Image (tube, rainbow over all chains, first blue to last red):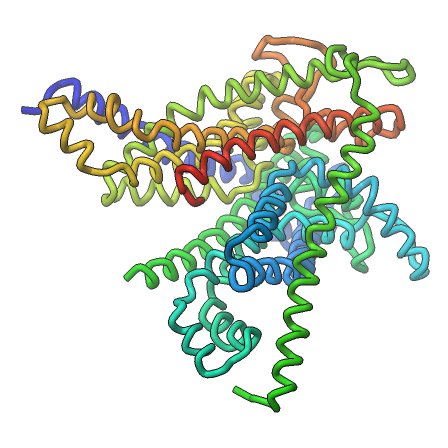
Amino acid sequence: MKQLSDTLFNAVVRSCAIGTLILVSGLCVTLVIHAMPVFRHSGLSFLFASTWDPLRQQFGALPFLVGTVITAVLGVLISLPFSLSIAFFLGEYFPSGKLSIFFQSATDLLAGIPSVIYGFWGLFVVAPFMQKIEIRLGIMPYGVGIATASIILAIMIVPYTASVSREIIKLVPSDLKEAAYALGATRWEVVRHVVIPYAHSGILAGILLALGRAIGETMAVTMVIGNRNEFPKSIFDPANTMASVIANEFAEASDDIYLSALIAVALLLFLFTTVMNMFGRFVIKKLTVRQES
Amino acid sequence: MRTGSYSRRIVVNRIMEGVIFFFAFISLLPLTLILFYLAKKGMAAIDWQFLTHLPRPVGEEGGGVVNAIVGSAILIFCATLMAVPLGVGAGLYLSEAKEGKLSYWTRVAVDILQGSPSIVMGVVAYLWVVKPMQSFSALSGSIALAIMMLPMVIYSTEETLKVIPYTLKEAALALGVPYYRTILKVVIPAGMSGITTGVLIGVARIAGETAPLLFTAFGSPFLDINPLKPVAALPLVVFNYATSPYPQWWEQAWGASLVLTFLVLCLHLTAKIGTRRWKIQF
């Protein structure tokens, strides 16, 4: 016989799960509802127009879309050699031992530092350094800009890609590797012809997850990207990303349509990162299941 | 697979080994630099007054960040209070009802939440709380942080309860203990330290968050513990001072950064030690 208290307990636990579900769907619905006014106001030109002028009620989010994609992709590209090296270093060359523990703790630390600290450090250390480089190159020495933001992003996502790739590299069956070694392959040949072909889709998934994170990163980027609402002409120009424009302008958005435009940017950002994440997780889950079965 | 001469393969192997080691070690450089700058500039700014006084206006010497430290504590405490019961409950449901539509969709929801950018939580908390109440508040800030923390708590609860041996539960049930008491008195206590670790990781994650607080907690120069008023927070102070035009505030920002980083890294360290012991992987 089922007791009343059991039924009650089950109901409570179940409602927690339902509550989480409602929370997330409520989140999406809220964003969509509040973003509607601007789509009604400017239609699809919200996505394709490149003028963002709140005073004249012109809302074109294209500069932010482009700014976001460029900084994130550039950041991931810069981080790749480093994160993959760490992944091979920890997954293949030193899977255990003191050096491995040291490296893991160091990358954990790197992942633990709050993003506002990265932004602060970037603003006061990396930006002046970039300024010097820009003077030498003979271009406008802004210091802040897309390039600086990408460097900071790269530093921030190295631990992330590294840890995902390392986990995937560790999934490579050791009999495959041992077979290659037994045939006289060098370590690099094993990495190049056994580990990478086996793990490449997982590594790709890790890169996607890192990209999702880079797209959503707010504070560090806001502090070093220069916050200019124009279409960037070179990678040293100041620009704005979706996240940074929200961070900068949300608190001062005076009228409803302006606010709605910023919420629409938030909605876009949310969709972008969710798609990246879902896809990345899907690939990883598939790989892990293949391993277990 | 192309193969060259024996010596060429050895050389290629050597070179690639060098390249991998080089890049791996170079990527530790930023960490060293950040910690170096934090220690050098932060130490100079921190003294007893910095930790125990309210901020002063620009131009006046001294002043501290006690309001931000207290504010951060309030925000984190309220967020934990909200996220933990809901998260543990949901995690419990997921571990008990492994299959099923509700579990599937809840997992999808948690995945979405886990990956969404922190600034979106700020926007949502603004729309849910700040706009109807017409005022920035500590409450809205902690709601935003609670949403950020929720996935961590759910994951860690589910993962911990998954590895608790089924025989433990069966033994309790066989003794005639009601189901709910089995869960509350046997299963949860057995997984307690795993859940605590998850909560710590969650707290470490939200303690350094700035973006969700920008237009919810907003920041305030006063020491105020009313949850319906705007409140200061350490990350907000770092952001506001760092982007201000006053060198004196920059120094304060270094000090606040050092305090913040120290707190966050301590939380991470504690959580990591717990994770190693419990072998939970996220």
